[in-house]
Length: 276
Image (cartoon, rainbow, N blue to C red; front, side):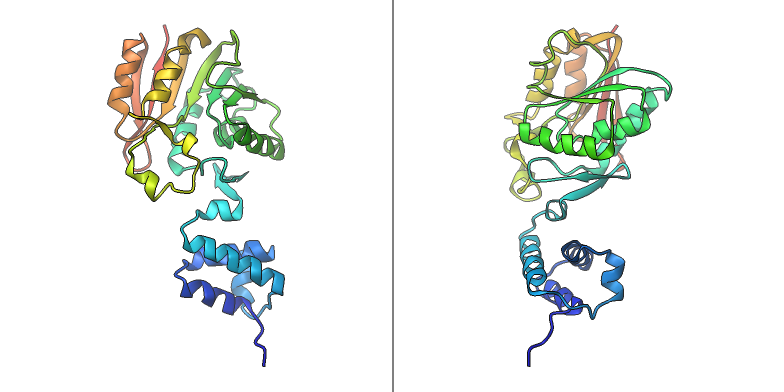
């Protein structure tokens, strides 16, 4: 006698290949287009053959450590939902610390021109736009695929104060100047061991800066003064062990008020500096 493939059996299949229960429930809810609550409350629900095939494919991919965000196609950041694909990095909680720091620097009623470089999926720009609707944000990336994802997110959330520009750092910005420049650029060295495991599925071009990991910061700092207004501010996200080197680079280029800030784990994660 044929046994119906139920929610309960589907979750048992996931457990047999060591999929975390929460991940299994999320993937099943995604497959069936229902809430996780319905998954939990209706273990007897029967999957169609097509649904079972999709679900089995998802848990197989998860068993190979593909990130859950890529499997679901979405990720929450700053209490907002974002489309996420393997063309962009998965937003990290520590980047919310960067958003929080920016918000502390921008009065809610002030109109400022802000440049966000290496925007990826656009999470920083969208989070800022949601909290500071009077600012004008230019968000750039050299990846057209990443910008396509950012465009979806900007449009889905209805932000009218974000302009997306295809640009390799400042190459497409002409003589434009900004009050604040923010960047969470690639900052890993080519030899970083995380690339072989934790970050295996994420786009290398968005992770690796070069041999030392500081190449993107140098590229930005070489031209940033031409694009900052007087008393302008630059703020970088960086690796937990890069703050001292970055401070030195900023000091060499004449920036003032250089200070690093900590993330939720108490690690130096952001560095801020100002022009004269």
